[in-house]
Image (tube, rainbow, N blue to C red; front, side, top):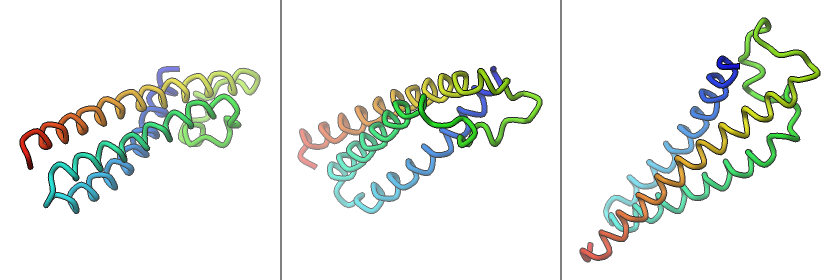
Length: 122
């Protein structure tokens, strides 16, 4: 079970890393206007939170054999077929919600920095 959580964590972290890279590139492109850059970063991160929340909501109905976690899980560590759907669904849902929470906190920080820049007149 811990190995399954570890693999789920890695797969979701990789996906969030690619999304964060895209957000970072947009923020760098807007770096001439710091307030706008952090507003865009916060808004795009909130979109990522929405996608993660949607994936968490979808997790119980997604067939376990079609998840990336299942593909990376070694054969000997896979649960029996009768309990695999529930186990994979719960683990993926928890993982998506964890990353959604972390992303929401990052968005909050970005919006706070944008607010500070706004108060400073930058």
